[in-house]
Length: 296
Picture (tube, rainbow, N blue to C red):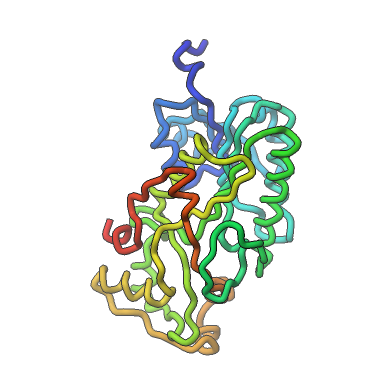
């Protein structure tokens, strides 16, 4: 039987508990009742050690989700969509399970800034309409629409966090030093694009802030204050790491040596404003620029 103190703690279900989810668990351990959905039996011990009660379920198998909707009043949805198609069936299955339980009052979803598509380097806030340029981004738009509808139907407060490139020195693949060491090229200045970033620790803190203060049916850009083109970002990282700066190529030459996925990230240019992050979620960034975050 749970103690009175335990029963008074807010209950949170984390769905998709990877690197960012584990950072959130570390922030909330001992203060919240934490549950984490995983499709991997091999991760059960890791999640217990992080302070969560692990729940085995697979978003691709709705029958495996059981009664998860009755376990927590807050949900942090960090799971990615399926790798193909235009619809996020995983989010659809999750929302069906949550609706059956009828307990969820607040849901925070980790979306992507890719839903905006290419803005030609323009600076903008969350009022910009979505214009996904890839099927990957279209699946995120589909998820956002499903979540909004869930909020209208159930009265749950839905907060959509639109997230750019996540980095951190202790995050697997989360530091540019590996790419720099391989000598992977970037675009020449005439072809280069603006990109946006957030340190993984600040993203985890933004998730926690949204679980408390996120507005109902509200979108928040979760990015730092950096205003750099992609090539300049990698030049800065190279200088900080003491590595050679990456070669610069015209777009056509870069397409011959980079993967279609890498080129897709070089096909969209945008500069995000983060006023809602600071004013509504009241988050003070620990790493306001990539220069500080990369040094950390």
